[in-house]
Amino acid sequence: MRILVTGVTGQVGHELSRYDWPEEVEIVAASRHDLDLADPGAIESYIAAGRFDAVINPAAYTAVDRAEADPVTAWKVNALAPAAMAAATHKAGIPLICVSTDYVFDGTKADAYDEEDPISPVGVYGASKAAGELAVRTGNPRHVILRTSWVFSSHGANFVKTMLRLAADRPHLRVVDDQRGCPTSARDIAAVLAKITLRLIADAQAPTGTYHFSNAEPTTWCGFAKEIFRQAESFGYRVPDVEAIATTEYPTPARRPANSVLDPTKIERDFAVVPRPWRKALAEVLSDLAHGATEEPEVTR
Ligand SMILES: NC(=O)C1=CN([C@@H]2O[C@H](COP(=O)(O)OP(=O)(O)OC[C@H]3O[C@@H](n4cnc5c(N)ncnc54)[C@H](OP(=O)(O)O)[C@@H]3O)[C@@H](O)[C@H]2O)C=CC1
Ligand SMILES: Cc1cn([C@H]2C[C@H](O)[C@@H](COP(=O)(O)OP(=O)(O)O[C@H]3O[C@@H](C)C(=O)[C@@H](O)[C@H]3O)O2)c(=O)[nH]c1=O
Image (cartoon, rainbow, N blue to C red; front, side, top):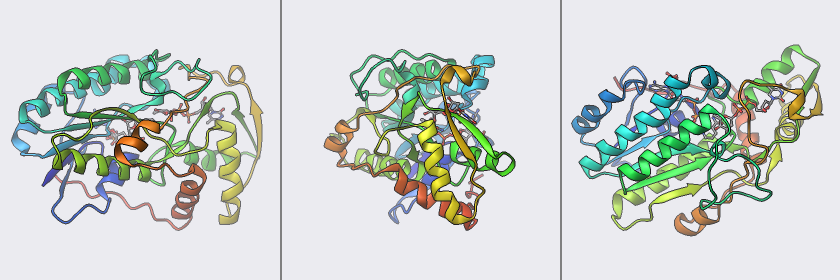
């Protein structure tokens, strides 16, 4: 059984490439070098030639602020590439599993967002991901779009590593306390993607559509930062003061939603997935970082 995984140098792709797959699964881990998603024209022949049983696409243009100044590349990678993947996988008769984001919402809802809530992205990144979602939905009925949020891992770039890096030089950090969401471990996302993919391959009647998955227990970026340092102290990291500030005090090129908590009820019901609290997953990531367990993925060429 051959499964194509894109974005293998990223957080989720890396975890998928090192996931404990059943023996009969062969993961074809594609990097940018193998398949440049900014060139969507190359995708169809790559998938047609690959004789895959499924495609998992965690690759994306994820630089939220940079996307504001580079919307064309963001759009190619996040919208046109998934569109090409949807057409190619549909033609090949195989399922497509894509990863999307809480940033498709505008953040004005008071409660957690469910899959039926209307999307209304406030930045280029979110808009390009929303366009990718639509293309996947219309291009291949056998798809799952897994929306997740605030991803962290010992591998790659993320808020946990940014906080630890900044704290190495600064005794005082200022972090926004009026944007709510759920931090989510890339390893947990990979496990969910693997479960969904194997089910879709095995069962033509398996559920399809859009699903929300994040780790449990909403917080703010400031709450996340404080917990990172509370746990990191025992691993010998430098602990700064963390000051809670308003979004208006931390101007960024891209706006972010004030609330992007995702309701996981649907994935719990359809795929028997039970999200664990992000604090538990954070402890594993900090332990991996402290013990240098951040080996690079093997990339097939
Ligand atoms: N990070 C987060 O906080 C969140 C992410 N998501 C979504 O989850 C998914 C996984 O995110 P995450 O693992 O954090 O992403 P990362 O930013 O860690 O990794 C992105 C991956 O996409 C690859 N990529 C980017 N551009 C291209 C291209 N032109 N051709 C081929 N590959 C490309 C990168 O390759 P290279 O290393 O060569 O640049 C990298 O492997 C994405 O779909 C993202 O939108 C959803 C919510 C939160
Ligand atoms: C570094 C830093 C950030 N912030 C704020 C800025 C922003 O509002 C918030 C998060 O900052 P970041 O830029 O690290 O995170 P950001 O790039 O917005 O993270 C997003 O990435 C994309 C890919 C997603 O899909 C989202 O789910 C989300 O994880 O924290 C501070 O307040 N103080 C700081 O020192």
